[in-house]
Amino acid sequence: MLALEKHLQVSDEVRDAIASGKPVVALESTIISHGMPYPKNVETALNVERIIRDKGAIPATIAILQGQLVVGLSHQQIEYLGKAGQSVNKTSRRDIPFIVAAKKDGATTVASTMILAQMAGIKVFATGGIGGVHRNAETTMDISADLQELAKTSVAVVCAGVKSILDIGLTLEYLETHGVPTIGFQSDQMPAFYTRESGFKIDYKLDSAKEIADSIITKWQLGLEGGVVVTNAIPLQHSMDAAVIGKTIDQALIDMQQQGVFGKQSTPFLLARIAEVTAGKSLQANIELVYNNAALGAQIAIEMSELQHS
Ligand code: PSU
Ligand code: MN
View 1 (tube, helix red, strand yellow):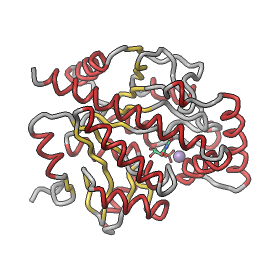
View 2: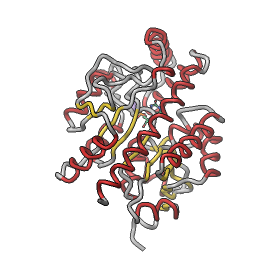
View 3: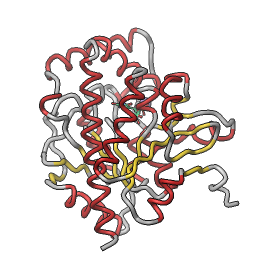
View 4: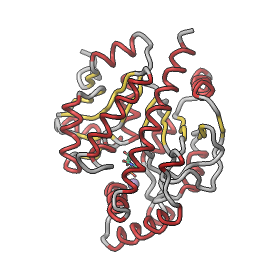
């Protein structure tokens, strides 16, 4: 058996779809275990899969289970991860070999989901928000490994931008330095997750899933490896008041500092704190934007598969 095959377990449905060039959309599991509370997390993850199927693509939720890199989780496996919550290891690139060698469970972040998607041959990945450059990174050096992964791994990530728990401007600078393009779906603004606008401009505004698919394929045809960030602003009716969410985030950042939270705990801490303070309103917005991204991810995957097989 090839070294990688020993560790990689792709579901029959996903393997067949990839082999026959059908559209597949990868989905992460840290958003399930660390990004949302149970049982909303499981409900959301299952709805996301259904939305992707309804659009005509195949969902592939990704995680590490008992040391196996699993691409295409079953509903039971999603339920298991959702219930386990933060007791599961949040697994980014650096952590993968240790979780695998110890035969543990790992929830994959954007970075590690991109890695496993690439191993399986999946090109499109939909999620809520990506990690980025944290505020005060000039002193903490806290920059998500998601950004380095986007620099080198050729997977397109559909998201609603980055939360303003991060420094959006510095995140865009970092992406530029590493040659990672940002595409705005029907918008020239970088969205800020809970809100549609951040005040920062996106690199390229494209108005259809087909144009997005075409430019991503062109990038890779040219041998320009690495990821692409496709931003899809939260639908207006679900977006939050910028001032309210801004204040909440500022307070959550103060709480984090006072409680001495840092490193990989930062993002989950901030997400939970914001949900708590907004009495679940932010969670509802988060769920809606993920659904919106799942639908766009499916459309892009469909267009990519048509362009590549026509
Ligand atoms: N942002 C969100 N929800 C999330 C995450 C980020 O709005 O669930 C998760 C993703 O899995 C992302 C990870 O890859 O947090 C980034 O963590 P860190 O900042 O520690 O790299
Ligand atoms: Mn970090």
